[in-house]
Length: 163
Length: 291
Ligand code: SF4
Ligand code: SF4
Image (tube, chains in turn brown, purple):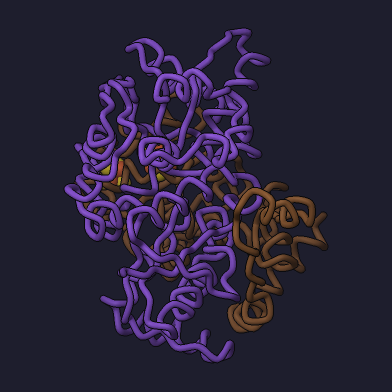
């Protein structure tokens, strides 16, 4: 138990509204993933977080099963920003080194290419032939400065250590 | 002539020339000029927001700054890009504290977010800039009552408070734009439910179950094709059908077309110019129906 976990969440961008939840369950009944998989329930994620079950939340799969569809957030009577809270919790998990493989791949593609999907030379060279304009260069230098300012570079290094 | 900075994002240049070609050719035919700006990057969509939300907002704001510098509004094709850029644009315009926090980060990259441009979805450019009347007049190959299942996906519509594309529970913009092309727009069960695209790579099973439901429900009502707005939805539903064959041993043959592809065909762009070979589920039947 870590009773400060909800403060940690409210202190992060996206997490501010978690304490407004009164556990009505509207989110869970609007959630397409909860309908398919009993491991996932947004109301439960909020409850356990408010109760301070930090380890269980951060180390488990459920927080990564949200498909960010925002159905719950549209319908919550308390205006709890559920999808954004799940981002805030994922952000904390990432900092602690709980990182699903696919996300570390996104992070490294972003830091090396400036894109999360690499445009291969083959595809780039084919553009003119099909009638598309030349692809403009990406602003990777600017991104590097942004990463340095926010600490994102450190986050993605942590990912390399844990691999 | 109305000009826009076109924001391509990652997935479209990496693997969907069909989307890019159809959108570019349609907009040019409709009198919209597209400007390709250098130094744009990934938009920082949900997978990056999951890693660090503040960095994501700074990346989105950085890209908006590039358009501000040349005084152009932005048009996005991908719904992930639309969500990320439009959401950040609205948030920063309405929250001075957040704006200065982000501007402190951007200063390191020599940028400053002003809040002077708009980020528009491809569909908004059609309804707001081209206009329904001009669009109707420009249709030279009407879609002959083709039965189309409109699919919005999630991030064109939600979070609606920040995106403001249409009513999140009862949207009409896509259905109306389908009907303008001479097609029928079909209603089907759970139309507004997610395609599962963002779960691919973490839980492929769940992703495929969500995609399968979409294919089953649109097949049941007799749709000729599904119309999508987003490269992730396209992948989930198009390549998804091949994977559904493998996993569920069920064979579907539901063509998935971006709305822009239907639009380009109806404006008379020859199908050979639209990279239809990108589709795993072949769209030949649709193309021959229109021709
Ligand atoms: S809908 Fe809102 S108030 Fe109700 S349980 Fe979910 S988050 Fe809590
Ligand atoms: S955003 Fe996540 S928690 Fe909310 S309804 Fe969608 S999948 Fe469920």
